[in-house]
Image 1 (cartoon, helix red, strand yellow):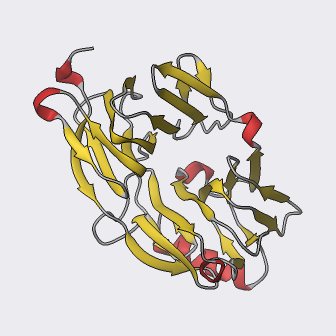
Image 2 (cartoon, one colour):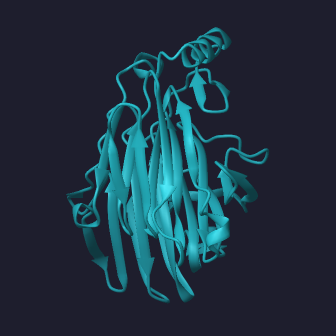
Length: 283
């Protein structure tokens, strides 16, 4: 594939400090005034702290309707419970993919009192045809997440999508997501073909990296997100200190989005119905 088809950096941005749940400190990367969304992605939060007071209060019971949440734990332990009888423990390296569908109420609470808590939560929109489906919960332990070494000095954990014929455990036909955790030694290179028509972003959470080749090459510092576009070939190189980043892509839905707090629908009327259903205990 030629350089003419390489995925360039459309824009770069840093996240905004915020808090959610009962006061858990987060950095919001998507879902801010500078990047409201990136269809089909509605929100991306990074959480990462060694201070228990930043996370111990957790995320007590709260509702969702109309989208999916993807939680990727890198460090720490988090207990999930919902009102449909699902329960699971997220441990380092594990992934939870929760389809809220027509509605559920759940909690996400730390199962540790000290040490580091680090990871990501991504919100993925559902098409209108699937917003009122039955809630579904998928949890994958670290040993279910395949890891490949596609180039010298490069390791990739495949949460969703495919790398070198190895598929991640997560499947969602509506948006066909790609979700990779990429680790690069200093100076190591890797190229990967993005799915056609998908919106994509890369976020460096350790070290620094270079994206692109030749004149289009751009530096991506730690805690910096790049919105990608213009082509399908994703080229990345580890910086002086190596890098660890997530690469995420999804098929856009091209549908109207009506959102308020934990509800994401297509119209204002559907939003009002969601509030009514939740208040009347129909979740």
